[in-house]
Amino acid sequence: MKIKNFVGRDMRDALRLVRREFGVDAVILSTRSVEAGVEVSAAVDAARLPTEVTVESIAPQAPLRPEPIAAVAEAVAVAPAGTATAPAEQAAVSEELRTLRQLLERQLAALAWNDFTRREPMRARALAELTELGVGRDVALSVLEDFPVNPTAEQAQRAHYALLARRIQTCDSPVEAGGVLALIGAAGVGRTSMLAKLARRWLLEHDGDTLAIVTIDDGHIGSAEQSRSLGRMLGVPSYRFATAEAFADAARCVAAQELVLIDTPALSGDEAEIQALAAGLAEACPTLSSMLVLPASFQAGVLEEAVRRAAPFSPRCCAVTRFDEAVSLGGLLSTVVRSQLPLALVSDGPRIPEDLRAARAHQLVARAAELAREDRAHADEDLLGRRFGGYVHAAA
Image (cartoon, rainbow, N blue to C red):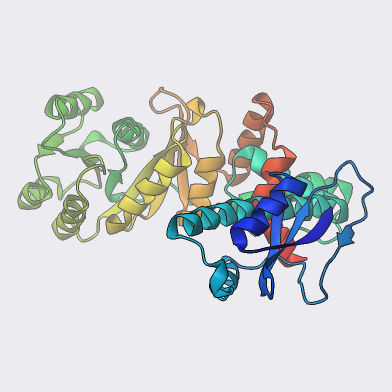
């Protein structure tokens, strides 16, 4: 890396000198007002030169750490009156400084990451493999906090996967003890299919008169017929209500059943409507619990939004659908870890109820690693530097 000071009449003149000698890849380390105008300390990557740093004309008081933008702005503000620039020029300079700062931060992150891979190769590899799974940055870093200090070769291969699995809470199926359970989730997540599997699993060990199915939906085309068809297929009573209030008025019709499964509208409408539905169901049945249905095939952002919208229901647990359709499980695992919702069930096919099994955290992580291998996922050094360089630099 080559570092040099440039003095110009004003900031624009100094930056012009930087560009002329160092090119567009130069980064700004610091700026300050001097008697002649503005002094800019700049650096450029000297990849083709010897690895040692060369410094030219560096004043003793000039720091080698990048200045915050506020400090740069202050340096420009206190420049001599003759160096003032027009508003348009100031905006251009500010944009140029912003771009240069981003470039500097990226380069520093890359340098920090490269240094980290030399100092902590096993921990760096753990972060790389978690990234290849598609796990979120925050979750990967939380795993790294518990990574063994001096792991054996075998620990280094498996510790991060085990630590990730440890962060995934699991629980028993919420229907084992009976009660009233509402299935909630976004549109197209497979709530009705999950309900059918839960109902069929219940009927393998209980009589049909112990179960009732309730559908609450006034807007979905065909919802009434779908509800009746499901009831006929399973041989159990099935009811459809337009609203939670209508269900509350007729809740006595399912009071005798040991298990009541409720299929709710998609959590895609107005948030006030979602809150009203949650409040109405809670009033209709104080013992009601809910389970959030999360499809493994959806992107992380959609899953996070589903968790946020489900908050008024205070879900007891979650279940995964479309597990067999997923090409990556990192987004799902990250969402489950962040939400701290216990994971109860995994649906990995269309068969009722064969394709429904209890959730096992280590199996989910193992499948995530398998999918990453099948997809030949690879996290390049540039991505890893941008993702973790700032963290490892701060922790150094």
